[in-house]
Length: 209
Length: 174
Image 1 (spheres, rainbow over the protein chains, first blue to last red):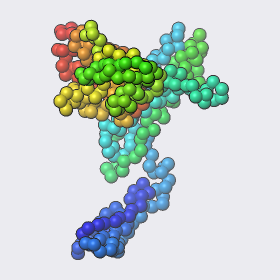
Image 2 (image 1 turned 30 degrees about the vertical axis):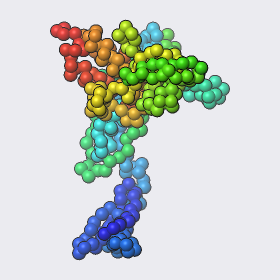
Image 3 (image 1 turned 120 degrees about the vertical axis):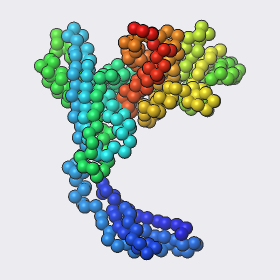
Image 4 (image 1 turned 45 degrees about the horizontal axis):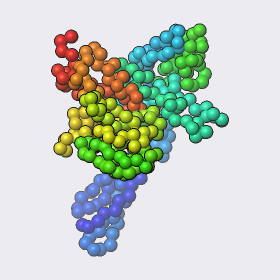
C-alpha cells in the first residue's frame, strides 16, 4: 500500500462510514476512501453504511452552546470612585476540555478582558478617537494585573453534560458574564444603573458625590 | 552615527556603527537576529520588549527596547530571553512558566520572564516576608500586559519558584 486519500464532512460532528478492507469492515469518521498499491492508480473503496450528521446540528445556537456565569464582589472608595474587585467566581461548561490547562488560561484571560470591557476600554468614534491613528496602550487602557483579583479569582470548569459530549468553543463566553456581574455589583453598591461602557472611576465618583 | 559596544548574555558585541535613531529593539532583532525580544506597542506601555540591564553596582532592572535607541545601550551589560537558559537547560522560571501553562500566544512571555528573573535576583539579596509575597509579585509584574491568560498563571508560576526555595527568597521565621 503506497497511498491513501480520504474525505470527510463536518457539521459539528464528522460523517462516518464503513469500508470493506482486507476481508474486514473498516470503520472511520470519513465518507470516502481511495487506496493506491505500488505505482498503480488510486482505486475507490466503495463505502457501506455512510452516516452524515443531521442538518439539525446547524442550529448550533441551541445544540452547541457553552454556558458561563460570574459572581463578583466589589469595593468602591467613596471619595475617589476607585473600584476594586475583591473577589470573583466564574463557572462554565464546555463539554470535554481537550487541554484543561489552556481552557483555564482562556477563562482567566476572559475574566481580565471582561474587566477591561466593563471598566477601562473606551473607543470613542469620530475626531479624537482611535481612528486618528495616534492611540496606543497609554490611552486605550486594558486590564493589568493590578485591576484583577489575581489571588481571589476562582474559576470552576464543570464536567461535560454527558460522558460523550464533544469539546465546545469557550474562548469568548468566559468574558461575557463578567460585564453584567460588575454592572450589577455597581448597581448594588451605588443604586445607579449605568447604560454605557466603560464605567470609569470618574463616572463612579460622579454618582457617589 | 554612533560607535556601539555592549555585552549581551555574557558576550561582547561591537564596536559597530549604528544610526543614532536605530532603536535597541531593531538592533537586537534585525542586526543580531535575536528575535526572542518582541516588539509590542512601541510606546513602552506593554513591556513585551523588555530586556534585563545589569548595572555595575550589582543591581539589575528591566528596560524597554522599543523607545530606547541602540546608542543609549553603549557600554552596558544586558541579558535577553535567549540568555536565560544555561547549557541548554531552561531556568527555573522558564520551567515554571511551562509547567503552569502561563502563556498561550507567547508574545508577552520574554518580558514576563525578564521581569520575573530580576525579581528573583532581587529577593535573593533582599528577601521579603511571606505575607508580602503576593503584593511584591503583583507590583513587580504590573507593568507588563498579557491578553491571553489574564496574568493569574504568570503570578502563580513566579510564586511557585519562590515558595519552592523559600529559604533563599523569603525572610525566615515570621
